[in-house]
Amino acid sequence: MGDDPESWRLDRGVKGPLLILAHSGRALAASARAAGHTPLVVDLFADCDTRALGGVWQVRSGAEGGFDAEALLQTARRVIDEHEPVGWVYGSGVDRLSRVISDLARRCRLFGNRAEVAEICTRPRRFFSLLDRLDIAYPEIRWDPPREPGWLIKRGGEGGLGVMVAEGDDGCAGEGYYQKWLPGPAYTLAFVAGGGRLLWSGFNRLYTKAYNSRLCFLFAGAINRTGLDAPVRNIVGEYARRLGKYLDLQGWHGLDFMLDATGHPRVLELNPRPGAALELWEQPGWSALEAHLRGCEAGAVRARPAGGVRAFRILYAPDSLRIPEDWRWPVWCSDLPAPGSRISAGRPVCSLHAEGETVGAVENILRQRANWLERRLFNRTTAEVDES
Image (cartoon, rainbow, N blue to C red; front, side, top):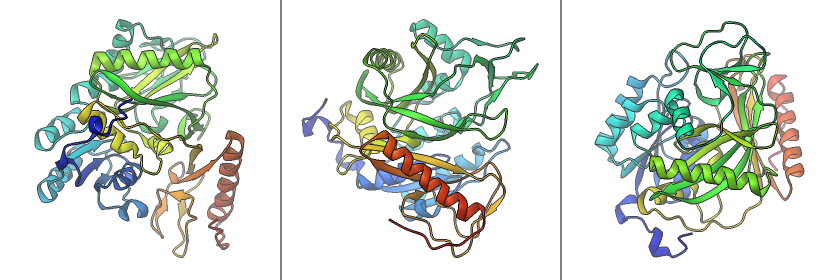
């Protein structure tokens, strides 16, 4: 798809500083750096490895843990005025802030979906109405509290923080809704769209982490293998094509879905922007964020070279934690908090990475690395780090 270099070459002016807005911008910044751009990151964490990639501005969180929209807007405006980026990209946490997207799109070239598209994808009543119009299957939903067990309540929020087991009359004001609980893993179709077409796609299986009996679905990573059969992949690909054409989707997306009792895919949500799992598809000479930019700019994406099995897991703190001042992170960790940082119980500590030839081998490496970190960090030991 678009193998001719002339079909995907961007305008000369696109190489240069690129503004990235996301709850955690490290993966996007690393992909931008790999493609030859200078990342200017505005996020909530300003992790050590993000700082090593380019300019970083940390923005305070709002009342519900996401961005304070006004603080984000003011910081992004200042970065645009002072550094004149060639464009900007939004990731997690910004797709729900349509006013921010609209404002910044008037000031700096947006590589991604316009505010109207992001608003459709993040407003459940509008999104599920669109799925009905496009004949796309999704789990049973309702807007009033269910009387029987087996339902989830979804109130939005990133990383599964807005998904809980419904118990009694929880109340579902605003954009919240109830969804029938489907057992089994969740998956994502990662895809790049542009010009009304799907330009590239790949499937991930998602990991989740239970924090307590009700908060069972924290996003905990992903692997770029699924074991899904061809009919399921074809159906989900067709769903993505319908959405891409109808919404004129631009760039990298994630279409989350699960399988019902009959094995039929049912869509959970469409993330209208690049997500953390895009780094599973990075290859030397092939940047996922560059594919996003090229999809938006040229409606064509250079063919991606074959790669191995890759996965990452997010390590959550079971209790309040302080990172030791002399702590040295293994090379297979990312999203690194600074020495001395305090991390509250239930919050992410870092991400762990592994790659190999088989799913079993990669997931075993992840378990071993998670156990290693948990023993040393959570038990407050300071054993020497094996950085192999």
